[in-house]
Length: 315
Length: 315
Image (cartoon, rainbow over all chains, first blue to last red; front, side, top):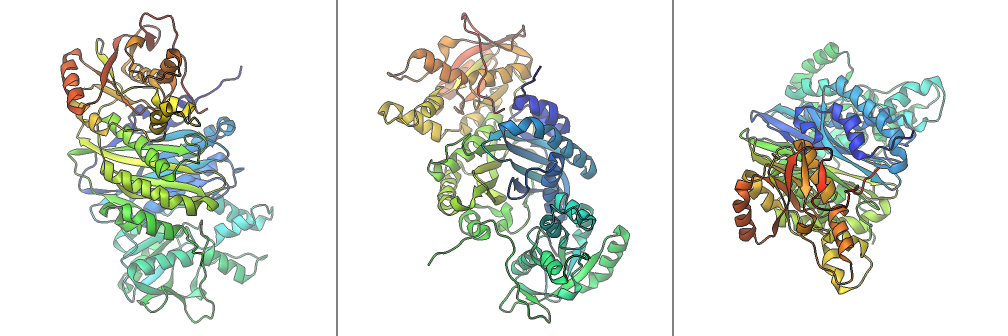
């Protein structure tokens, strides 16, 4: 016996178990959140399109996790605690049956890891490709979120973790070499720095997550703060790969994107707090630059003849 | 000189002008809304996929308006006042340049018509087809939104406007007959009943907008209220078409969908209030059924041998 499922069955079976009370059991046209006014509700949306952000042949559970994690990373970048999210999934008819159960399983696992719940959304068919849009909601105390425009002259630029892994994982996606396994995992499954983002809310004065590559995202901080940021290329935390030359690894860090590490500015007086936090969280936090008065370009490389170029652009 | 625009340029030029202060000028990873706790924030998401919800050759301004209006209709169904929305647009690289400016123009016009603002979102490329996801936010006084589960035994079922137009417009999309022009307009550009929804919040005890066809959406109300709804087919407000037989018109109303009229239940004591509202708003509000104790089926046709069947399903 072949069981044909329609969208209501899928929602009933796979998505309703993921909801909290605000979703009203997914029985209404909308979700309701009665928010306490001493908190700010932080709202962000990120879409993953098949063939653009993912291949399509990955485990659907990992595609689900990646969709949620890139959104969680946006909450981290604002210093917000993620609380719930909204999902729209468009998927070709012939893929739904195989894809949705595994996709929902991935969501369920990450909901537990990151303590967030689904509150609603939409499920529709599409002609050829999968499209996933998540809107995520987080909260901070009133006025306490971290923005992109707070860096001051003399502030340090810090980055979490190491950069370039995800791009190297993508470039070597079909390789079976052991050396690339961690990079491939990182490409498939980014690690949003949610706890770090929350811990930084009283330390960082501007922050962004690295989704488009270090150069582009550091430029966003500088441009919004109306300053020039000087990157020290020697200080950028890079992975080691025997098979790859240093220049290629550096370029992956500068322009590769999809790292989802946090990039933030802070006053030099806060450097010791950053070091303490790094020790406490057992996570590398590296000073890689400094903000200066704006002159000509928003981003410069320190003591280096290389000129910054563009990262990936959709259009 | 050919000017190449990337997503930041498009956002800067076309979407930033549409935002309000909560969007922080689209310069951050998220939008912030500090909500007063005597209000509920109502959140809903609807996606339109090319080839599924629209052809793709329509005026992009109308596609934009339809995307927004189907979401506004969800706010209407909850009795909520729409306040802002979030947009994700995935579009093939080669279509962006032509599509986005017109699309944004459509949004701008409807923002003025419906008094809502964009607060954020995502813009990405896609391989073949356009995918549009809007998350809309509305508000009601604390606990004052209308749900799908409030109908009681003996309550009347009402519907706004006339039904079936949109399906007839779709079926005759390529026809040039004058007779079908209004139906085609309605298919392209639904009319969300926002003011009606707000006015009904103290009159209706359950409500839904008709997106999937009268039968399916009336079934939702009955099922969630754990009752049977008896539809009087003779009372359903239908359009006139000389070229179409009555049965086809009735079927378009029952199963066609995309009407975005409001379907609601209310106590018989409120019938005079509904009539007053109909006169005041100059909008047809027709009693088409009654709720009864549940027996066997959630939906029955009164005095009719026809059996209800299914509406359009995505999967």
